[in-house]
Image (tube, rainbow, N blue to C red; front, side, top):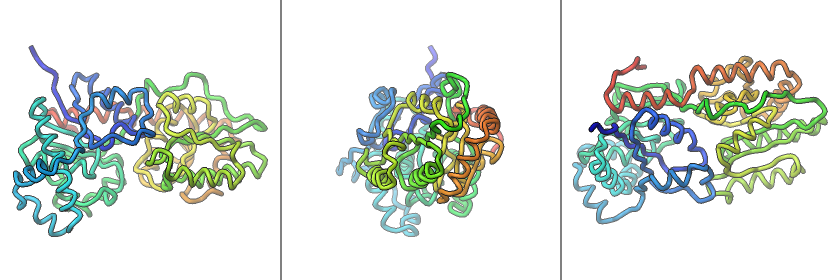
Length: 406
């Protein structure tokens, strides 16, 4: 009797509010007949656990973040320090500290993979979770691969070590791929693929035809993203104020929570909303389910995200899949997703006046709004289906036929 092929899947603080794209990929892998064992460093704060599937995900995830000092010390001695001595000498105390706090988790990962017959783990991070996989591998555990989801310099020390031993790697945009040679040099793996995260096209579609904004009525704007200064929500709120000062009844709803579960940057935004007298015009939903996001997208006239930095932007993809005219910022890999004037509109970041003008232009151009929505759906179908990432991970993890590399 044959058994399903198995892979491990390691995600930091899973399942968080932005992790729907990981879950989609896991489901796609399982539909392919692959058994996926979930690992994570630790649970996210309670206020960020928002999806209907979150409890199921927690129940089947093995958390590795409990530090056992004795186990960590024993584990550290099982790996010759000469393997990473040069890395520590070049990067200093931070890498040494990170290695020390991950060795216990690495031992747990190795033991669990041995017990389950898992020969490969894919790590959706290049932070400390990647070091867990590195150390497990150096102890004789499974091979591993990594995905880079943002600027590589934001993922901590030891990047050369993390990438050097990886079986393969993926990056979510061409812009990020361009960073690798400078940072990694000869430690760049021979197999690196540009593969964005994607969306479930069956789940994300309109439940009714899109209706453009009718002038004189409320202009419904929707945004979705963590409440973090880098997401630019403060600029979007300023744009709403500018639109309302022009007599446009702009109403903004933002889905997402800060990393403290409501006790952090949310308070800054709440103060700004009150200061600008927008309490009746801007709503902060907090962390909500994927179903709630889909409902908001179906209700919206426009989707707007004024982010200051973005690898590529799954929130944009969700809006585009639902044929909602989308306005974004020209940062990171976003221009690889949204072709300005074709699939949506792009403005420079940190520019509330330009953003307000773009919103007004699209809202007052119903034919363009509908054209952007239709083109956006086609763009997502062509390039950003979540099955593509699952197929790549399955193929490369299980040593099947390798597609064209970059």
